[in-house]
Structures are given as structure tokens and as C-alpha cells.
Image 1 (tube, rainbow, N blue to C red):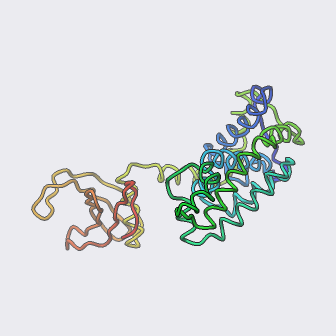
Image 2: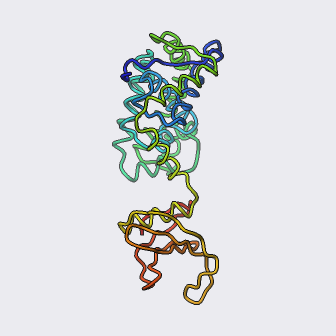
Image 3: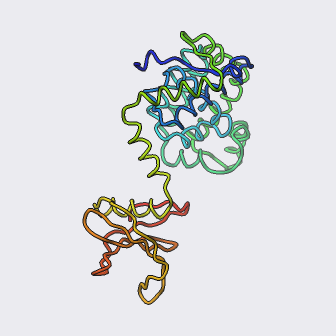
Length: 292
């Protein structure tokens, strides 16, 4: 089944609801497909266009264009889905504003970007008070002020052009639209999953990425050291290290046996025979880790 022949799918309950229900139902169906490890090439393109257009609207309503950018891992891909979706559903004014906001945001200097993102007054307050604030000596960078005006324009436009209604009508009129019960949807997704040749590899990768924290740290250390992890043997809570009793994780790579020791700031990969440190990762404030 090629991408262009994959149908948009709605549940019977969602399709029978109001505009918000229809758009939200498409979001739920796409999320379920993602949770089942289907990727974008295995989901209907128009379902994704609707999905990401709604994502953009939700983020922009909550925190302006800046929040959309902050919450978007790959703007190059998502911007394309959003533009195509807004155009296809007939949201011409929203498309025009999105293009202006995206173009201006990409031209912001570092100072303007910092000014735009800084905490302070709400977007609406900033937009209304730009001239007053400037006159009082509280000058904002030109690009930041312009972005705030576009955010305020977005809020007005959201009331004027019913993009949710346009999105819902577009979904309802999709060629080959499938409307399924919850049970039929589960079977439909299971059938799609069964057709994916590398699904077992995807599941294994998902399991690795969602493993316990010590395993993720060990995998990161192995990557830094250029080793391939073979297995994690055990945790030793009574390991002696620099005169202290610490928890050490024993593991094997393609190059031998090693241990991992971590504290609040960093984790190290040590050769237990020579005590040489082969790799270090430092913990960020959010308790993720990065290569040292």
C-alpha cells in the first residue's frame, strides 16, 4: 500500500461529533498509529496535514509562534505539512499569516529572538503596549515587537476564520474515508503493523529507548567510547571506588568487561582492571545526559 493510497481513518463516534470532535478524533487516531510504531510514510498524508495544522494552532494559541517552534523537533518537515494542510482545507488567511510569521522568525537576530522569548507581559499586552513601552524607555527589539504583533494578529484571525471548521469539513470529505468502530480501528492498525517488514527492529529500538535510566547511561557511555554494548550483568551496591562504597553497574561490550559509576553530576565508564576512565557523560539540569 503506497502512501498516497492510505485512507484517512476516523472512529464512528468522532465522525458523528462536532467540528472539534472530528479534528480531535483524527489526532487520536494518528497518535494511536504512532504508538503502534507506524511512521509518517505509513499514515495517510492528509491525516498528518490535519494533525500538524491542529498542532500548530494549539501551540500558537497557547504561547504564540515561539511556542510552536519550541515544541517542534523538525520544523522543515512540520512546516511543510502545515502549509499543505492549511492550503488544502481552504484556510487561506491562516496560511498567509503562518508564512509571514515563519519568514520573520527565521530572520530574527539573536538579540531579537531573546527579547521575543523572554518572560514578561503576555503577547497581547506587548502588542498593545509596544509604542507606549518604547516611549517610556522600555524599547523592545524591532523583530520581537513585530513577532508579538503577528501573535496578536493570529488571535484575532482565529476568531475570524474558522480553521477548525475548515479542517473538520476537509476530513469529512476525504476520498476513501474509513469510519470504523473502536474494535475495527484496532484491527485496522494491527493489519497495517503486520505489513511492516522491520517492525521487530522498531520494537527493539523502542524498548532500548524506554529502558531504565542506568541502561540508557551505559548505552551513551558505550557510544562515547566507541564500544558496542553486549549485556548488562548486574548492579553492585558494595563497590569500592576511591575509598567509598558506591553502586557500580557491571556490563560487557564487544571489547571486554567494564563498570559504570554515576553521581549527581556525571557518569563514568571504567576499566575495572586498570581503573582507566574510558568515557564520561555529564548530567544536565533536566537529568538527561550529554557527551562530556
